[in-house]
Every structure is written in C-alpha cells, then in structure tokens.
Image (cartoon, rainbow, N blue to C red; front, side):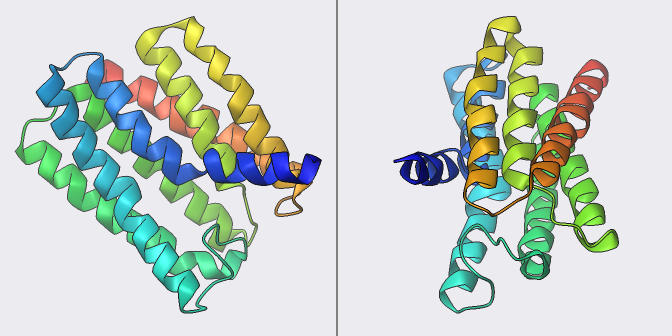
Length: 196
C-alpha cells in the first residue's frame, strides 16, 4: 500500500505536471482569460511538453532508465533540451510582450535549471528535481496569491517523501532539491517579479 501511494505521488506530482499547471496559475493573477491561455500555453509547452516529449522518447529508445531519468548520467540531454526549449519560449514571450509575472516565472525556471545542472554535472550529485520543482511552485504561488497557497506544501512534502520511499533519491538529495526549489526557484521568482 505504501509503495502504491509513493508511486502515485511520484507520477501525479512529477515535475512536468507542476510545470504544465503553474504558468496558467501565475498568468491568471494579472491576465484576461485569453492572456492566461496564451502565455500559460507558451510556458507550459516550452518548459514542460517539449522536454517531456524528448524524455519519453529517449526512455523508449533506452537512452536513459525511464521517464523520471533517475540515473544522473542520463540527465544531460533532457536538461539541455529543457534549457533550449525554455530559452526559445522566453524569446517568444519577450517579443510578444508577455506580462512580467510570466517572464519572472520563466526566469526562475531557467535559474533553477542552471543550478540543478551545475549540481548534477559539476558536483556529480543527483539532486531531486521532483522536490525542487514542487517546492518552487509552492513558493511561487504563495508570492502570487498569498499564504493560503502554502497548503501546497502538503503535496510537495508528499512527492519529496515518495522519492526517498521509492529509493530514487536519498533524504539528502530530496532536502537539497527542496532547498533549491525554495531558494532558487521561489526566491528568484520573487526577485524577478519585483523588477519586471
């Protein structure tokens, strides 16, 4: 039963799920329904759908160990693809005069990506991206909407626990991912949203 809960949390609260939903939530705070759909879709597609398509395709071809890419060495192509795709999306947003909050979100995602790549390949350590993305989303929504959104800490904690329970990460890797999400993801969103 515990294993099923952990597997369910890992799938339902995977990074790509948070990253698909978060842009719509951020855009909705300031945009009309059409603006929310447009800018949310640009970020969702370039930060989540395209990278996830590459990940799934690579997993099917055996290039890495699955759609969660739990082997650190297999993360090179997925993370570089995510960076390139997000950069392209950011160019579209800048040229299209996207709202500052959405640009701040893209910037915070890019900052998190750069730091996670430095840890993954520079330090050769497998930080938990599940935890990082979940906790970044919690802080981001708190900044946008207020303290009630801190209730999302519960699913963020659940997904962090699931990664350890399944043996995909150590407690230290999940805690480091959580700190990365709060400080780099959430913190850089807060800083950028003040200036954009």
